[in-house]
Length: 425
Ligand SMILES: *Cc1c(COP(=O)(O)O)cnc(C)c1O
Image (cartoon, rainbow, N blue to C red):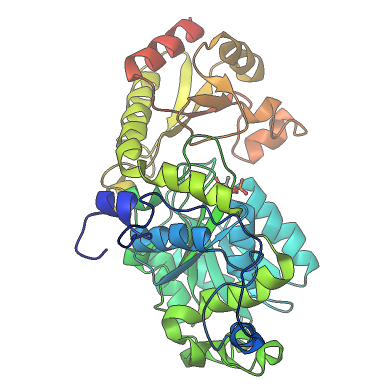
């Protein structure tokens, strides 16, 4: 929907019904699809024609929603996956196999860190982690001849660092590889990484896109800009024949705009099957219809809570890139001029015990392993996700024992602040 704004795309992009067709996206609750002749179906198996034959690979409901997200991010093609973990795994594994190497920001979601550092390592894929704030020399030194991609998160979960997308894109392109950006926290309402040079964008749609804590899911969006053929030797999976489809070459047959997502569907969905259910895609779409209305409210609440906490005597430190004085304030002004998200983290005086008793006293914010929901929630990593670490190990990992991560929901900010105030007293 090129001639319309992002809000209009949130509501109407992807599914455009014809005369007499359902106004709301139909849930195509069918595992399979009917054909009149074997020849018709054979063409689909050979990727000679596009269409549906089995929901493990593709389903129309998913494709409507994927098309909406591709539109929002400014990409050419997209696919939904069963979770954000599946989206990041597919996006990377589609171009980086056994013998390959990844350059990744060290400041990323714990699940993605584990995926790359442990599980993909078992598949023979190496990684070099760099600080998102590393020098140009350190970044340059991270690349190898077998590097296939660069990875980072626009706003990292949970560290809340802001990724310098343009700088990392330039470095990736100088080495003939694409930049993959996980844009879960800002969503395309607050940042569109493709405009800053990212080639592939991923999301855990479980977070703000759904926004109601109702459906786990993920998405991969291709910018359609990376020229695989210009770096053919690095990406043989896209530039040499796929014998499982009678020798088609994805980059030739589907071009820059379609090769990445077609290969990802035809090979990885076929073999791993991490498809999102059409029911979940429908729920995700309900969330997307109000994403542009909800994000400014999450930002307003996050900013108000961050400002309140930063003036409170019992709070040692607040991390929120919308606060002047935050180390990422300048980068946020560039990449997130309308604000980032509703997630704030802060350190309470008194460490683990103080954090625990503070959270117990909160009446509105629930203790949850979740973020980016309509309902405010919070978590103390030291007593939950990172409870196996000692105070010294926590400090070394940049997660002090008194750190609380709070995801500000859509409640009235006055009530959230009053709740924090009584809990701190
Ligand atoms: C939650 C999250 C993921 C993983 O997504 P799931 O949907 O839980 O699999 C990946 N990246 C980021 C930034 C996340 O916040």
